[in-house]
Image (cartoon, rainbow, N blue to C red; front, top):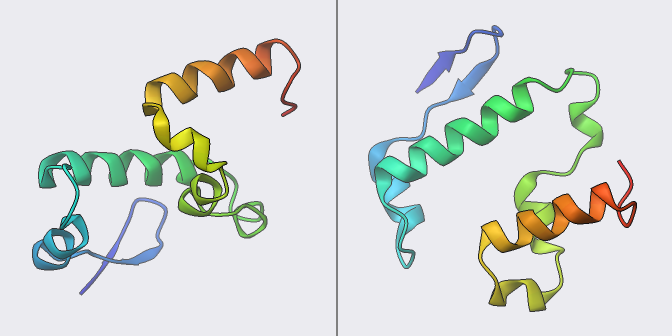
Length: 92
């Protein structure tokens, strides 16, 4: 099933059954999963359309992080990366 979002793009709507399947083996609740996916999509929607094809998907970026990152919470990693940008260790 498809839907048209506010930007006029046609998207596949994830069914509740397929989301439950995707969440199997995680501790993520379905309500939280929907909120996370919607939030990430809203972030991508703010990026001009002609730039989006040049950006890797967020899952691809996260998969490329060193395995040592798996020992830490997302908040810990965000705090580290914020510092890295502010200190010039990472460049925008």
